[in-house]
Structures are given as structure tokens and as C-alpha cells.
Length: 200
Image 1 (tube, rainbow, N blue to C red):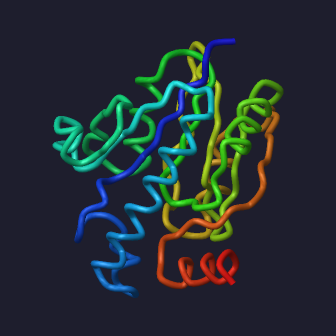
Image 2: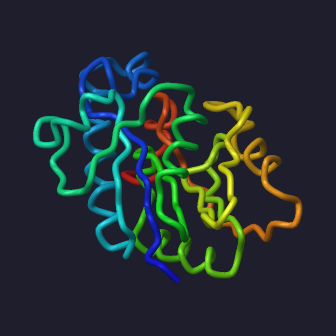
């Protein structure tokens, strides 16, 4: 099997750009700090994943200035226009054949072991989900085979239906693998809950 592709969808940790929902509750300065922490954690974690890593970044101009916005040697790609579903579909279409994993930079509980486990599960399943506590997912793994299409049309993002909507778009015959539930940090209450559970 070919080496898995790991696509990270993220934004530069800049004030007013990243984590805007978090900023509404904690302020823009704290949101920028947390965004930087989460991105750094994600990039450190994926180094041990054994995957070919690409950052799909927004805004698109950030892809052309890697040293300015992202301190990483990973390849940067612009997400391009459209809805999140359209941008994820574009990443799937651009990825080489084989296993394709999608993550964001929102899950502080992400570990190299979980990513390696996702790859192992994808060896035995058609799709793998890492569910998030809010009804979304912190990871989605798919096989890119001849004729495969991305399952992101009509998905209700940023709410409790994202995982179920993607799952409903998959063929009913698909074997699905599940990873542990993690917490995504999108709003102030998410950050407070995660810090309370991990630093007290």
C-alpha cells in the first residue's frame, strides 16, 4: 500500500484570522495564542505519523509565503475558493491514489499513536472517523481509488451534524472504523473544558 497522504486544513495563527469563534469569548490576543499552540502541537504530532503531509491553507496567499506564516518544511497548498466541502473535495482530488487522511489543527488531544492507529484501521476499512465531542470529527480517512469521489456535498459544518452527514454520503456497503472521541477547540467553553481536564 502506498504511503498515506495526510492533509491538514488550517489558517495562519494571526489575530483576527484564526479562531474567530474562540476570539469572541476569550479575546483576539488569547485566541491567537491558542491558535499558535494548537498548530504547533499538530505539526509536532504529524512528524511521527509516517504520512506524506501537506498543509492546505487559507487565505490562499499564505501558501506562497511559507516562512512568513508557517514555520514548517511541509508542502503548502492554497485551499482555494468555495465552501469547506468544496475545498476538502479539491484536496481529495489533488491527493495521489491511496489512503488519504484529513485533519484540522483543532484537537489538542491528537497524538502520533492515534494517527498511526488511523492508518492501521484504514488498512482494514473503507473509511475511518475520529469523532469530535461536538458531533463533528477530528479525522477522516478515505481510500482514493479509481472513480472515488469525496463525500462532502451538502454537509452541515460547524455543528452537531458534520460526521453524520459525511457518513450518510458514503456507500452503505462501506466498512467504517472508529477512533476515540476527542475534543475540538472552537469556542471559549471548549478551551476551558480542555484545560480543566488536563491541567488540574
